[in-house]
Image 1 (tube, rainbow, N blue to C red):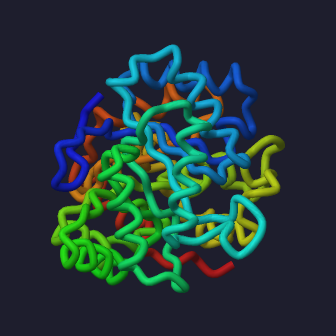
Image 2: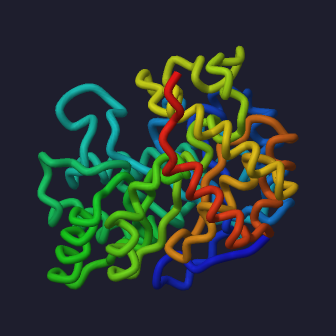
Length: 319
């Protein structure tokens, strides 16, 4: 496993990380979740990314159970706050009040003394960014959090956060967590340049486009038990559109020509960017991890990248 510094910090994270949305404590029971976490760790994964809202807190709980059987000093625990966790006007958001209570609750569920990377799950337009950054800085000063990051922030929002932190002499963000994959390269337009300028590393999610880039949906059918059948999956199924499926089919054929699985090619494509510190995979089976983790060692040739670019920019043939 390769490790990359997270932004300008000294925190080294595995280039492939295990995420806990839908799978840990969700699709999977505790024993299966813990086994998957242990398998990932044994293969060199040191970054485990969850959120308080994942499975209503169960993802944090099951990660905490796994940590009891693993060397804590070798693991980067990442979680998030912002989404509604309790009733009333203070049950969500990035106010000082919500962040303080959310962090305490995450620490209890995880069963840890501190969180390595605490992230704002998404922007909160109803709270001044100065208040949010002051709250996150306080957690660092209290020793409850080591590093802070954000998820789903634009480059402009990220810049505002870093400016607010700098103005108060506070802790700055070291990570950004955007959606990024071959079918959704949006971060390349402006976010990546902003993170590079601001000293922030990217931990990207959905590198397989919710499974579409694995090739299992190319016929337009949704297999039983796949994440698109889950009640929490995105109702828009943005990657299940005919044009996206047609591109995924081309990409699958390209991967085969270079002795890679489509999923391995998709991860290697994300990791080709120096702005990407880690890609999050949401495996639910040991065999999936066995397939995905070797992508950490793969490099795409110029010829393969050119063919991928051509497939992504070509227009679908008229029916």
